[in-house]
Amino acid sequence: SENSTICGIHLRLRAPLFRDLRDPRFPRAHRRDAGRGAVLRPAAEGDGGGGAECGGAEGAQDHEDAAQGEVVSAVNFNSPGQVVIAGHVEAVNRAIVSCKAKGAKRALPLPVSAPFHSALMQPAAENFAEVLKDITLHVSKIHVLQNYSLTLTSDDTELIKANLIKQIYNPVPWVETINSFEQRGVKRVIEIGPGKVLCGLNKRIAPEMEALVLNDSTNLETTLQS
Image (cartoon, rainbow, N blue to C red):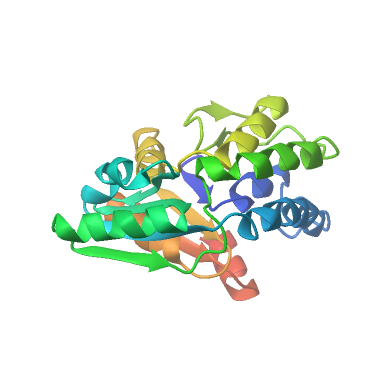
């Protein structure tokens, strides 16, 4: 409906391209994710990148002192009080120590395979740009709000591609994304994919917004009927 939206990483963009999620063309969209995975894999095997979760504002502030000539930055603003940092492993470890020393309630490394959404991912983004050249995006039937720009678009498929590329090496302002949904009158958000992490974050950001999970055929039927 006009007061609902879909959230996730790439399925948020993929789903609006089809009138019905049961459309037989839907599985083809996974090819783009396969290409994305192929270009991100070298980043995981590169010069030692990792990430960490920091509870509290300390996570967004301490990474600069911890860099010491390496890369570490705040990359995911997940919810009030929860920030994820990423970069070179040693720089991330220094940031964890710094956060704890300044009283962060939570500061621990995350089991991630690459320093996602940090500057270290720019080479992977350049490779992904080559993959997208062979992908045709159709005009979306609903507006798409991308994390990178926090602006709405539906018919500018080249802008959507450009933002997908930039998002790989830029932070994810998830709090601002959900707040933007709420300000635009969205009453329900639907998370597509395994797990329900985003639903949990969304409830902390906008408690009045209904959060649904769509991760199997049963949830699909229930969601379509709601």
